[in-house]
Length: 123
Image (cartoon, rainbow, N blue to C red; front, side, top):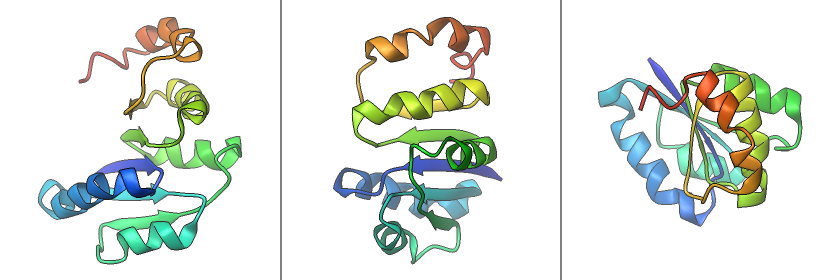
C-alpha cells in the first residue's frame, strides 16, 4: 500500500482530495490529509476508509517529519511560502514532493541535495 500525504485541505485541494479518495481502493492508496483546521480535513475525508485527517502546526518540524517519513509521496497545497519547510524535510527523508507552485530561490538551493538523493529519477 502506498501512502500519499497531502498538506492543505482548502478549496483548491477539494478536487484533488476527491480524486485521490475515489481511486484509493483501486490503487491501494492510504491518503493522509493535513490541515491546520482538523474539522476541514475531516469533512473532506470522512467518506473514505482509506483516508486519515490530521492537524498540527506545519512549522512543527517534529510532527511534520513524523508524517513525511510515513509517506511514499508528499503533495503540498500550502501557501507557497510554506513549501520550503515541507521541501527540506522531503529531501531529508528522501521523499518526492509535488506542488502546484513555481520553483522559488529557496527551493532552487535544494537542487544539489534533490539530485544527490535521486528524488527526480522516480517520476
